[in-house]
Length: 141
Image (cartoon, rainbow, N blue to C red; front, side):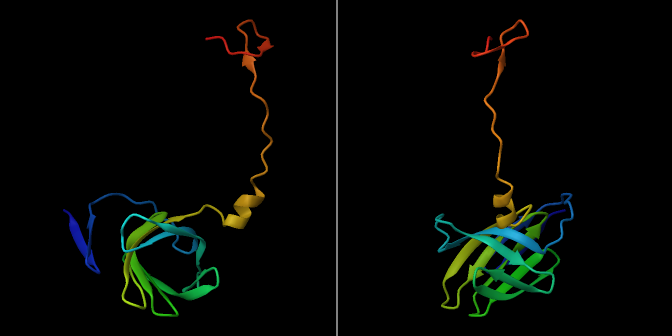
């Protein structure tokens, strides 16, 4: 059986499928597009907190989720709502000035500042076996 949910003029088709439970609070990359013309901007470190508040840079507001419908509202009354499953959400937005938009967001495994701290890679030069068990300069195929 399929279920159709209408959210602010946008139809989301939700088919029966299994979803891994991932807690909603956390840090996301939130991509938004005012006018829904395909020109997305991104807000890094968009953070949904356990206490029902969120932060996106200096901007703050409140959020809630009911039956996989995630909704958040900025202090200027701009709001977003969409379908949330596992590590992502997608939906629509209405600005304080009536402008309509689209969004999608992806949960990050770690906050951006922690990711950057771990990006210290020790990159070694690749070595290829020359076919006789010795390292050579070229790969033999």
